[in-house]
Structures are given as structure tokens and as C-alpha cells.
Length: 127
Ligand SMILES: [Ca+2]
Image (cartoon, rainbow, N blue to C red; front, side):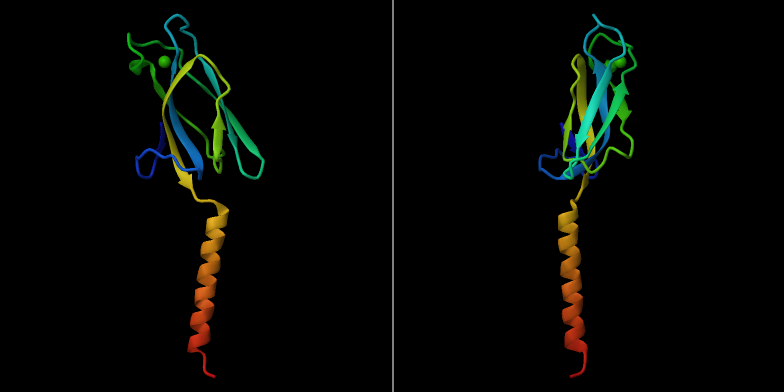
């Protein structure tokens, strides 16, 4: 589940985001080795960002929940709209992300404020 860090609610729209953290665990006690999970983020300008997160390799319980650990992404993992995880053999939960409004809505907001200020200036200036 993708969780918006600012509201703690599930997040399902198509906006840009920054990945903050993820809970990862080894898949099975049959393979008690650390797992390197590769994440690739895609930005709308065509650039990508990638990182590897490594689990602790500790199978510290009989159930899967106690084997999860929270791992964090760096600040570079921002401005992405899609993430792929081309790794097999791990368990994942609680993906935390922060919504990052796109540049286009911000430009539209800036243009709206500029037009409103010009209209206000025009109305208040003497003729
Ligand atoms: Ca573990």
C-alpha cells in the first residue's frame, strides 16, 4: 500500500512523489540471507533514479511481521511518478511517500496570482 506521509491515508492518484521509506523482509526462513532489493524511480522528464536497499538477513520470528525492518530512501529519490522493483524473493509493505505537486500546477498557480495582482494594480491606478 502506498501511504501519503502527510495524511497517513492511502494514495492512489497519478501525481509525482518522493519515496521516504519501505518495510522489507526476507521472503522465507529457507533463505536466511540478506536480500538486496533494487528500486528504480521514473521521472516525467525521462530521467531515472535507482537505489538498492539491503535487508538485515535476520529471520527473527516465526511469523513474517517480526522479520520486517523499515528502510529509508535518500533525498534523491524524489520527483518520480512511477517506481519499479525488478527484484524477486522479498516481502514488502508500508511504502511511505510524500506528495510532490508537479511543476505545471505550480506554474498555473503562479500565473493566476500574477494576473490577479495586475488586475488589482490596474483598478487602483489613477486614469
Ligand atoms: Ca529480517
